[in-house]
Image (tube, rainbow, N blue to C red; front, side, top):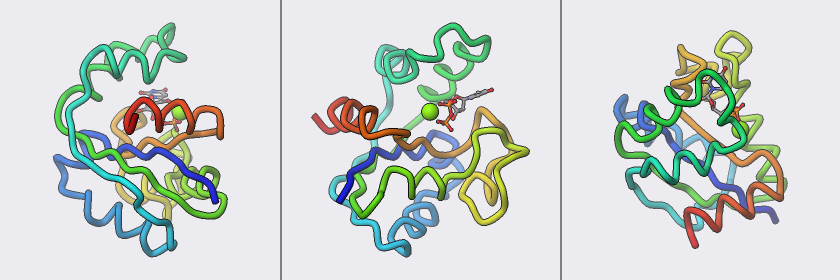
Length: 132
Ligand code: UDP
Ligand code: MG
């Protein structure tokens, strides 16, 4: 069993897609171990995306991620980390294929509805960051 951290980003909450996004994870038989809604502070958003701080889109990304409530999910299942990444779809809006969450609902590379941990190392750090 693996655990991974998912964030339904502010556009997902604003667009009232929380239920539909969570439904996909449940349909895939992933277990919701923990879940809450909250607003990311500037400091936490900068820390969460620290690896991207040199990118030109970084200020926009932080502004977007702090622009409203998000939903944090701690999901568990076999191969949950790569499985959930596959369910999200590609980062680039034009490469996110239909059938994935981003492919079906996102129309922007920045406002792409969901975050998920990309490795066991980052999952451990992100679960600690948001679920303590
Ligand atoms: N992002 C962006 N422009 C880009 C690449 C990424 O605004 O050209 C944003 C987007 O919201 C993405 C987040 O930065 O989800 C983190 O980027 P990363 O490369 O880690 O993609 P992810 O792991 O979310 O697929
Ligand atoms: Mg990433």
